[in-house]
Image 1 (cartoon, helix red, strand yellow):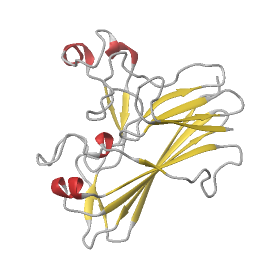
Image 2 (cartoon, rainbow, N blue to C red):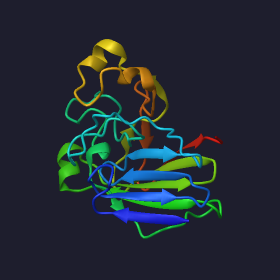
Image 3 (cartoon, rainbow, N blue to C red):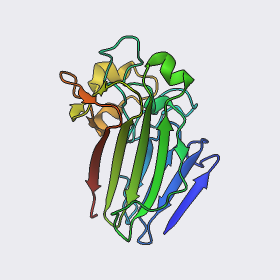
Length: 214
């Protein structure tokens, strides 16, 4: 089992971490946005969509993969960026290589993001995000732990939304190839109508598993 850290990833030119399972499965996570940009099966089949024209500049969100959407989905609060700021923030890679309760055969990466002067200028709450990526023989599990470290409750959006830009909107996206809309569907967290309230010191945990036996 291998966890390799790149200052400049061969695929993105940005800091990333590559997880490699002994059976040949692999996963790459960019530290920019904690975005999982690749998940390959043991047979080398890519499971995730990544735009061929995705921009890796350390500023804008990466078009494709698994982004972290926090603290809002879309833009119900116009003072915050669309889909929040987590997907465009620089995350830190923890020294942890095992998650409590994880499969003994899992290869793990733990990334963290806490509030800063920059986030508090946009959103006046203290928080700590802990993102655990676990690669096993035939599946990839991502778990986001959201902890409210401020003195007041805050609201964030969680659930599942299916989305695709389709032809007209896709044509206006500079970081999406011309026929890219035909090759993916987004499965995104975002409970627009009823945000989840997180009390001070409370932790909210969200997880998803992608199973791909072939």
